Length: 488
Image 1 (cartoon, helix red, strand yellow):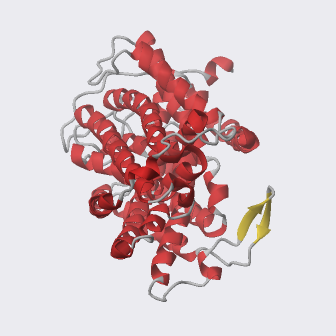
Image 2 (image 1 turned 180 degrees about the horizontal axis):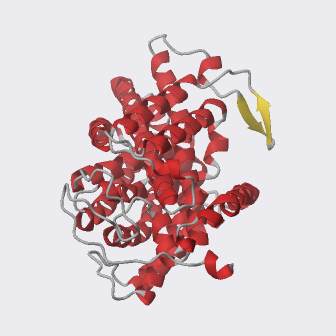
Image 3 (image 1 turned 180 degrees about the vertical axis):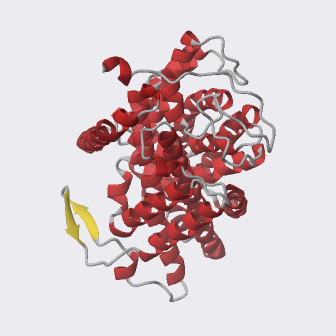
C-alpha cells in the first residue's frame, strides 16, 4: 500500500503547441479545453489575481501593527519568497502545460498521496480565498453606496455567524447578500468561457491599475518625509517593529501575493504554454511587486503609520486631505474592481484543479465534464460557485481567511521540492524554461515558504490538522480506490 501511495505519474516530454491544435499533455493533458490565452492575457490574469486586498487592506495593517514605514522591506522580502517559488512554477508550467498546477506537478514528482494533499490544500487557496475576498468586496461596495445614502442594512450585508473566543456566535445578520451576488455573477462568467473571462479580467485590471496610478501621481506631492522617520521603528516586543516586526509583516503581506500561481492553472488553455507560461507567472509577479513597493511608500508618507490600521487604509489616508477627496471615491471604485478580478481568477482556477484530479480518478468523474459549447469545466464551476457563495454568505472574513495562506504556502514549498526531485530523477526531460541554480533557488524557496507558514500560524495548527483529516477521509474512501494510476 505504501508503494501505491507514493507512485508517481509518468512524465513524457510535452510537444510544442500552436493555437487550435489538439494536444494530449504529458499528464494525460487536456485536448478538450480551448487554447486561446496569450502571454499578455496570462500576465493580466496574474495581476488580476494578486492586486486586491494586499494593496487596499493589508498594507495599512502591516505598517501600523508590525513594520512601520519599513513595510516596504516586508513587501520586498515576501516578493523574493514568491519569486523563488515563481521560478519553480514557471519551469513546471512550461514543461507540463496542464491545468492541475501544483497538484499535477506533485503527482509527477512526489507521488499520488502528496499530490492529493496539495490538491486538497489548493481548495483552501482558491475556493476559500474567493469567498474571503467576496466578503471584503461586499464591505467596500456597501461603503461606496453609503456615500450616496444607498447602503444596505447590516442584516443583508454581514454574515450571520462570527467567531468569538473560538466559538461561532450569531450576529443578528441574515446573509451577506452582496458577497453571494458577486460570486454568482462571476461564476456565471466562468461558466460561459475562458475567453470572456479573460476579456472581462483585462478590463477590470485596467480600471484598478489606473486608480493606483492616479493615487501615486496625485498623492505623491502630499508625502511628508518626516513620516518615514524612523524607517524601522524600535522593537516593542515579538513581531512588533524592529527587524522582527519587518519579518512578521512579511508573513502578513504574503497574503498580497496569493494568486500569482493561479496563472499556472490556465496552462491547458494557453496558446503557447512553453513560451507564455513563464512570461505570465514571472511578469505578473514582477509588476505586482513594483506596485506594492511604490504604493506602500506613498501611503506611509501620507499619514503616520500608527493611524493606518483601518479596513481601508488608502481611503483613510486620503481623507486627511480635502483636495484629494475625489480620489477617495476613485480608490473605492478601484478596490471594488480589484477585488472583483481576484474573485474571477480564483473561481477560474479551482474548477480546473478539480478537473485534473477528476481526470486522474481521485475525484468523481462528473467534475471532469467539459461543456460541449463553451469548452469549460462547467460542472466544477457550478459546484465551486455554490460552495463559495455559501461560505461568503454565512461565515465571517476572519474565519475564512485563517487557512488560505497555510494551504498556499505548503503548495509553494512542494513545487520547489518537486523541481529538485525531477531534476535528479528525469534530467533528460526537455525544459523550455529552466530554473537557474536550481540546487540553490528551489531549496531556498521551499525554506522561505515553510518559514512563513510556521511562524505566524502556530496557534492555528488545529484548523490545519482538521482540514487535513477531512481530506484524508475523502482520499481513502474514494480517491485511493478509484485512482487511474493504480489500475495501470
